Length: 339
Image (cartoon, rainbow, N blue to C red):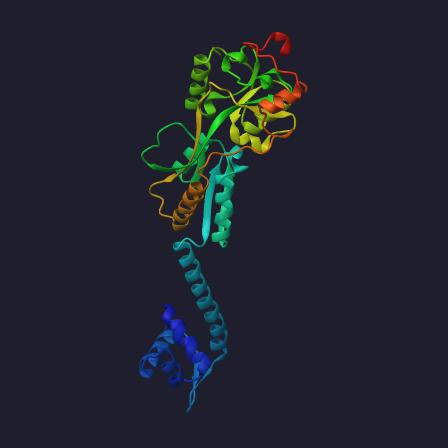
């Protein structure tokens, strides 16, 4: 049995006449009659009662007509849905992202644009570390991922640069590190640090350590490790120490935490969208194109919000914290009594 048999049968069943149905289907009446006979032979029962003028559905034919209509509707719906998937208008796109990058900028704006342009598509978002996203994309568990990496891409992965941030120091409000007009790494000797695990990003870990050594902070005093930015910021707000974070942390800074630029720590935080080169999904292709457009519009460096108790500090706020008209001291490092 083929779909054309069902279509022929439905036409004859609705018209109750071979001639009218043949004209509607644009085929010869004898050919249509043979097709219906073949269908009845395959089913093993009569679908029509032949009359002097036209035909009449048998009891079995009436039931079969209802089911045939439903089957054809399901087939047409499946065809429409498959076509939308093939053209990138429907389907499921699985995208990973680092949580700290989802608060502002290219990442959330890309998600919003995707929702607007592909309202019938499902966006499956999965927050995870960059190193885990890379493996998930490579294994096919993710279609794409927004990651931070300093490494060159593997041969099976494509990547698109979408943003570039800098490393800043998160410190509790009133901490001595916030009093410097030009904070340097050597000023942070013996200061307690909340650090990140090397396994999270080995290359970045080494870059940070090397940068600290070059700046005179040869052995950061690590008192606590954190799994991610959110945890690090939380521990900083508890005054357990200071932490190096991406400047994008400004969009989720807890109350009582300030971000301070470190003059001699110039390590980029490049953000990429990655995907498998052999992933032929039209939905993924559309997403990559949209992300590229969003990134181009937002190519300018991220600008800080007006300073407040919840955002980054500046020389002005540092001065205000010490009292109007009182100039902050400029020690070469933070003394033990200040910690």
